[in-house]
Length: 300
Image 1: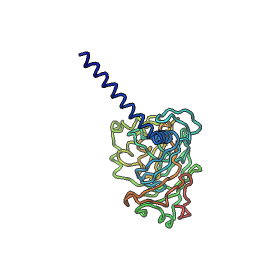
Image 2: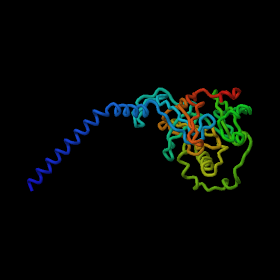
Image 3: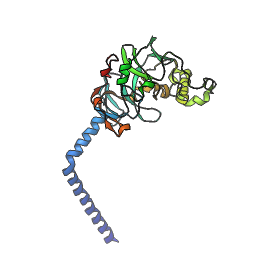
Image 4: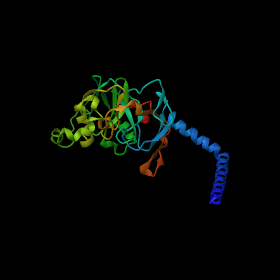
């Protein structure tokens, strides 16, 4: 019995020596690559990242298949691989395109900041109103629309939306300011409050009226109108530029400052997934902080 224990101990010692030799060899042969990978992971976690855009919710400015560069030092510095903030020097502003985690399912989203804490927001027949100021919508000329990289662009309306000093190009199925009902409104007027209970959490700070509107938007797709509400402290209101095809705050509610990770700075490269991932060379290195001028079709 004693001999068996001694032999087992010796076998264990030999095995540990073999493992140690192999580990030293791997480190000696691959340490340069391993250090590079570690540095890149830390860099992507805390400094800058590049994210694939999986949907068309930010059309026409950002297309599905774009790879965007995200500045994670835009507002604060975090401990790599955590949400712990070491220092903070700024906050997202209206008009910023940001990345954040969807609080309902954990997916990474790319949306535009429409309202910041303290702003009063309202949506009337797709017209955005912030702090009592109604957005101005300027229709893009036909020649500019033809230059947009949007399939079946003739099916949509494209506008320059100007509000509180910010400007962006948005797309919709119908003209803002004109009533466009989806389905029979009587189907949601008579909804029982209990059916929307799951949405009360995401809009609790603004009251049951907004929670019911979020419920209608998420469940029935009726997202053209929202009652006036105030964005709570530490939270933001996000919307996609593709207003009729975007899962944003109208469906998921307010976004906490803690889960906003960075500001989309530019498009590094782009591929057309519907064309066997053919590169869109004209979109490489496109600046997202300088919106295109609708009077200049070449800029679109």
